[in-house]
Structures are given as structure tokens and as C-alpha cells.
Length: 359
Image 1 (tube, one colour):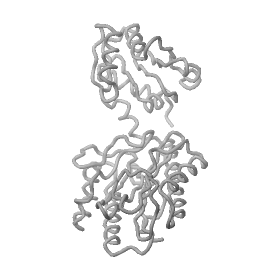
Image 2: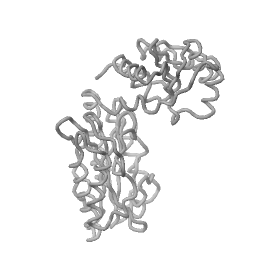
Image 3: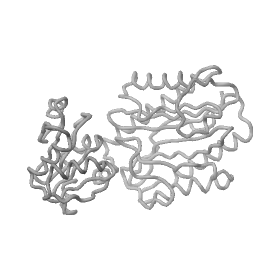
Image 4: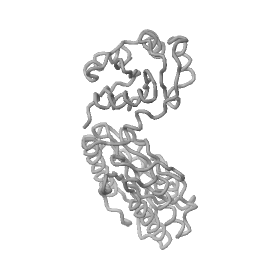
């Protein structure tokens, strides 16, 4: 795995090319990636003169222990007043910031504290572009997270029986992931029975499972800071013909999209591969979200696998492939796996059967 020092060096080279003196970083995932700091509050200022982490008294000891080679400053007053003062003291003239991660109010505080000598430069996705390309150690960690997710979804399927509640299944999934070493779920676990399976982001409720209902299980773990994401759909009973047809359509759509994943492929083309299959079944109008998203330190990151996305896949990218169909009053079917892009091949990281399971 690249060291934080190497990552900072790559970022600083990018800043020099963009003629930015310093970059303000407020995303916890980004400051962890660059320094190893796992605290919950702070801001990072990266420049050619050095890197400073500004945080409050709760995290000073932690910052010194985790962020080797980084200057740790304790905030005085509000966080953004302290960051502004740091920038003023460093005589940084052109400061980059990501407008998607800094509020208008925070920017006003920064401007006031830093003074008129600082010019604020829009700098979107500087760290995220580095994070997209996972190295071998990161991929190894993500592989383990994906394997664990597959094990958990198989365990969850064995829990399914008439009368069990969505809440019971969701709670057991999250208990087991922690028991097996995960620090927690990558997102709120999705368990949806029957008609509620038509909700792509359904949260567990007290609904009880009945015979002849669809079940959508969507879960992910955070293991060693890295996320996984898997979805499987099950039918309790003997699936009727239209459900079997829908399931086959989604499975073929996912298979086609995975086959389209390769070094140099446009993300929009991967999305199109899934939609073309569903269109052949006249089900594309029931596919209401994108085909996938990037995965890493966060469960949703770049690149996006969606309509019109021209970003081309590169070695080290990890994306989800998760086509689905959803119909109000009937339910939904989604199949999702995590896929890594290598220079000369594609690797499906999640390991769980994809064929229709009838219980």
C-alpha cells in the first residue's frame, strides 16, 4: 500500500501543476487517505511548505499518534476560524477548496479569518481522483471485505422463513458483521420483503415475511476502513413465471455489464450494456437507478457507472454492478457485485451464488 507520504507527494505535484499554493481538505475519508488520521473532527491543509492538521483537544493525542510527519494544530475558537488563521500565517495566496464539501457559511468564516490576501480557487475532486486508483494492498483489503459481505448474505438467506421480521434479519446481519471483524456496516442495511422490495433503498421495518414474497438483501461492511456492497434477491416459495423472467433479465443485464467492464471502457457504455438487455425484455422502464458506483473508503465514490458518463475505467478502479427492476405492488429484483478493474482482466470480488434462490 502506498504510504501517506507518497500520496501527499502525488497530491502536491498535482497542486503545483494547478498553480495552487495550498489545498483545504474537510472530508474524513480524504484526510485518512492522506495521513492515516481517523479522528472525527478537523481539517487538513496540504501545501508544498508542509501539511497541517487542525483539530480540537479531543483528537490532539490521536492526531500525533496517527498522522506521522504532519503538523498538528489545536483549533482556537471555531474550526474554520482556526483554518483561516493557519492559511494566513502560512502566507498561502491561492487556496484550493472543494465547493461540494465546504458550506457557504464555512467559506465566509474562512475568508474572514484568512484575510483579503487569500484567493479561493475551486478545486474539485483532487484527492478523490487519487483514491479511485486502488493499489495492490487496497485491493487486497477490499477483496476481504467483499468476501465477508458474501458470507453474510448467505447467512442472512438461511434466516428467511415465514414470520421473521425485516428488523430481525437486519439486526442479525449487522451483529454478525461486527462479530466477524468489521467495524460496522458500509451503509444502513437494506432488508425488504414483498411489495417493499420495490423500494430500492428500503430500510428494515417490523413487516413479517410471508410465503410467495420477494426478499431483497443489500448489505456491505467496513473492514480495515474499506467498503463492500452486495445485493441478492430471494423468493420465499415457488416463483411464478413473471418473477422468473424478471430475475433472468436482471441476471443477464448484470452479466452483460460485468462483461463490459474493462480497462479503458467508458462508464456510460457499461451502464448501456445493462439497459440494452433489460430493453430486450421490455423492462428497462422499471430500472430506476444507475448501474453502479465507485467503491473504496466510502461506499459511494467515483467513478459513477451511469448514463452518459464518459469517464474511462482504469486499473485500480473498483465499482459495483447492480441492475434492478422495481414495480409498485409487486416488489423488486436487484443483483449486485463488486468488480475490480485490472490492466488486462476484470475481477469480481464478491463471491456468492447469483442464480435465483427459492426457499
